[in-house]
Length: 583
Image 1 (cartoon, rainbow, N blue to C red):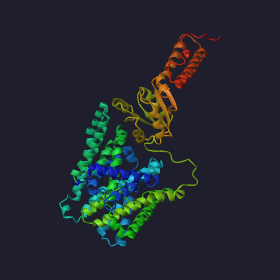
Image 2: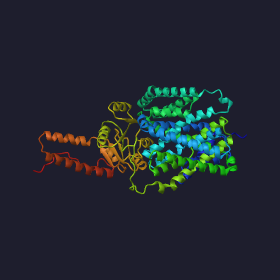
Image 3: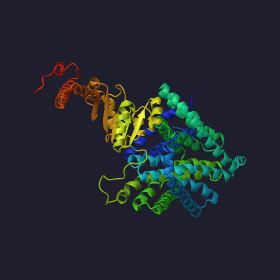
Image 4: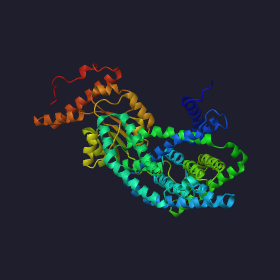
């Protein structure tokens, strides 16, 4: 008796093929998205036929897009959102409107599609791939530069424009099932009320919930609460007939300025990555390769037209906003592809009976092919986009949330370190797990983020890739040599400093990549000894000589202990009797 393949069987095959294809495509510099799409096409029903039910898997995988929008929202605290308003409302709005109109015109006049079908296909093609562009910016170190922020602003407006696009497709729908849907003004009212409700829930329900979990110290509950927040927000919007992506985005924004932001990013990111990968796998499985094989020239011509139109229009917008022509060219090429939300909107248009299933497959292939061109275009035009007059190694410094230093632990030790760094003009990101300390610090104007700063994923979310310093100032001995080695390998550009409880901790950290290991009470003890000697009338010269003697012997003894790994070594170097002073 033949049993249908189990979920375990499908998951094994999907993950196996995805791993192989993504590794190959990453190696070739083509990005993970194309690897997932091709893996899905190969393992799907039209090539090897090893895995089926793509529609069911797509429904589950769409949670990946929901989580992606939540993470986008977490990046946008109110001050940053306000600072980017000109780029969001200016660059973003013009890009979506002009690119959408231009591509719609190309489809309407260059093909036999009707005007309504051209609109349903052209507007989604104006959107770019957030899942492809943001990792490319991050890998090149430009995510938090002015260029990266402008790109992010356009992508954000594109994400927000999904809502009116879905509304427009619903308004144009020929499906009788959509005739009983709510009118546009009612959807608008629902949207405003839902956003207001989510903001209030975030302030008076969600933040106290995370504070409670933080006090309990249950890290796995943070994961549960984070996913609950995203899914609850999305479910509210779905119940009102609105976009689940908008609900997730609002959930992210309402927590963007909370101390729990980096912890939430680190906890949600793995789920987002896996589900978004599954989304692209399912899309690859659903590609109608037979329809594409029947019209290959149409697919290639439309993909090249899409890339050319978007690159020219976006470059022109960049020049109108007084960007240098090299930056405007880079912006146009980087955003020239179609995006993952195009697949969602094509499915919406197909449900609305505005386009046939064959058209949805053809234009899905066009989006896929356009994604394949971006890495090649960026590589081929790199000499043209780089300013030859620029000084080698010189570039715009990080802005926004990027900081010169990360300080993990904001107790009495970390507070002093942070204030001295701030006094010297450095920007600092603070991380701690003590909720009470975070609340107290906020009363004094210090912004401390909640999270376990020994985790590499959280350090990366907090900006460790761009930090020059990482300082571990926690109480106790929470870091060992292996953990510091992992930090150094992940963030080789950062100098690592560690607070050690005593000389035992210093010995245990031997061989670690820490630039300096500082015993937490040594300097204050030396300071007290100096003050005590001065109080008894000892001269400043003798006090300095005594300090120099102690430091020299202690340094020599510590070196011997570290080399031998034995705290009992060099006991004769301990000063246990009064020392004769030279006259």
